[in-house]
Amino acid sequence: MGTTGRPKKPTNIAVLHGDRKDRINTSEPKPSALVVEPPSWLGEQAIEVWNHLAPDLKAKGVLTAWDCEAFAAWCDAVVRRRHASKRLQVEGEVIELPVFNKNGEQAGFRIGKNPWTLVLNEADAQVQKYAARFGLTPSDRAGLSIGEASRDADDDLLTG
Image 1: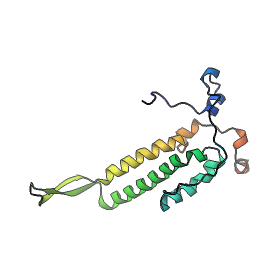
Image 2: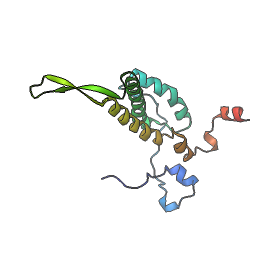
Image 3: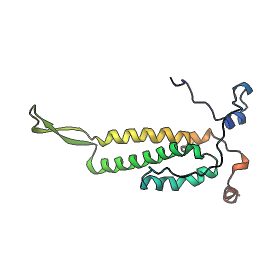
Image 4: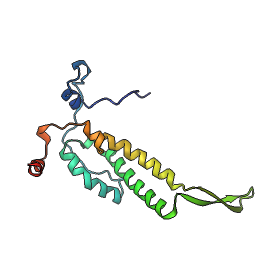
């Protein structure tokens, strides 16, 4: 049975927020500096999504070797969402669906929701779920802090 309530804050964020010491896991396992690479099952388009964001997430300490499967699932969901969205643009949200009689013969058509809507909604839910875990939305990012030591030197050049 899973836990209920809000997800637990990452330990480094709990420390920064000054949470009570008895609520901070001081023996949390920390990933080694292993290679962060996409899993072999990831499709070509999903690897493009991976290559777009993974280097920056790794540099900021958000993506580690332990997170590769979860991040790959996010990349895969992004591709499925894009594909479903394109299909809906072409076919429309409401389509004619065949109706069959009791003998299995087509008896006509009915108007119904395009099945790609289901694919889009499921992929969208996965994208949102995993995006939150990696701080990929503005509201989720607002709750994260990587500290001064992890800042990108280019940020200072751009902001003065």
